[in-house]
Length: 136
Image 1 (cartoon, one colour):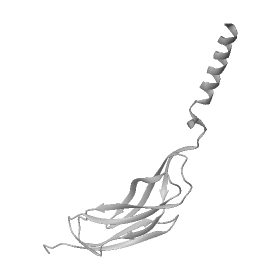
Image 2 (cartoon, rainbow, N blue to C red; image 1 turned 90 degrees about the horizontal axis):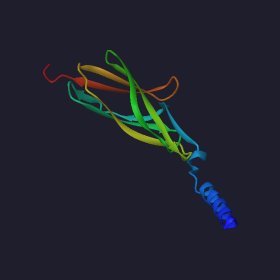
Image 3 (cartoon, helix red, strand yellow; image 1 turned 180 degrees about the vertical axis):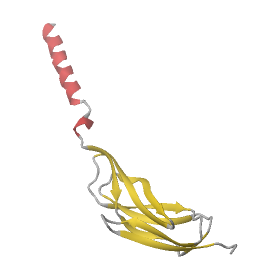
Image 4 (cartoon, rainbow, N blue to C red; image 1 turned 30 degrees about the vertical axis):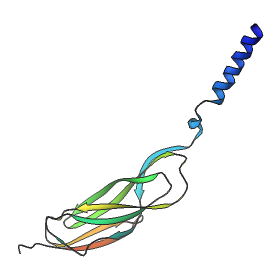
């Protein structure tokens, strides 16, 4: 009887070890960083107080990279915009991938508006949009 109990105890130990969660051994990530914009599609004209949608393509460093948010600053009618990507997951494919997101803004004044999207450390892709006020 003792031999059977010891054998069951040993087998139970190996069963527990063999079925333990293997997620502890995976390389999981969770961080955010600025992604480089690769291209921008924007209209050439717009109307004051009407939303303007701009298609923005950006590059992520692996399969877990997704859009997080836009970081922007505004100086008069020039907006400097960076895309922030979030990397969250386990066993991410190591493939550089382009993602697409829509940037939307509503111009409040007429005139030329410049959108400067960060495409490198000190590089930008610019879109220039002429905003008109139909009441003028």
